Amino acid sequence: MAAEVAKVSAGIGECRHYCRVVSDCRVSGLAGLLLTHGAGGGADHHTLVSLEQALGQELGLPVRRIEFSYRRDGKRFPDRVTNLVAELRTAAGAFADELGVDTTQIVLGGRSLGGRVCSLAVAEGLPAAGLVLLSYPLHPPRKPDRLRVEHFGDIGVPVLFVTGDRDPFGTHEEFAEHTGAISGSVTMRWLEGQNHDPNPAADPEIVAATAEFLKLGPAR
Image (tube, rainbow, N blue to C red; front, side, top):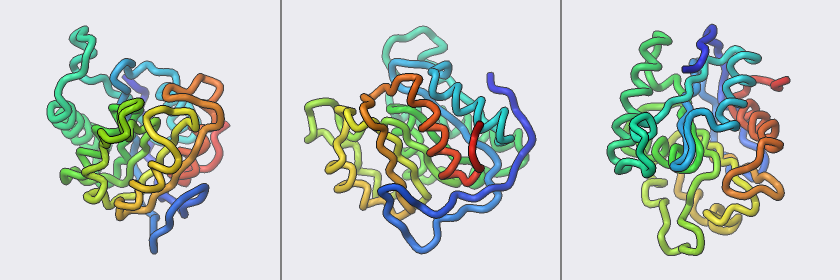
């Protein structure tokens, strides 16, 4: 689906912007970025397309957007999370094989449900260079007791969270409380005035935050 371009070597750099810093959050030999979609959208979501265009076509990082099978099959609702994690594992392995690397050189990322699936896969043992979690659904709206953080303590890679400051799936205080369980470095970026599905005008800010996290330099 996505155009593939030459590999680059980059690191996940020093954490800034409301981040908690551990001793070293650099990862050498970054080879690619795999992106997943949210429950109600697909791989053609404008933010995912913007990330591919800016990081892939402009900055030279191989980027792949994947579509979960329930979307390809025309289903309205996602499959069980365990099935989605298995799909992600397969897709990450295939992408890494195509690039001639292993998944330790692939950053996994996604919007909402897709990001959660990526984080679960890493927590369950899928090697990865890092995580880019866009609009992470910390809990369902108006249900702060139904947290989706039980696996955070098993995540040991650098993580970037990019979330709207009006997103009902998690507040500043809730993210600050629960991301501390992640042993990898954590960078938190808030999008001013944005909800769970940031509008296209916010895409350049999301792209810039991701490029900075991956230490790719500015995207045009």
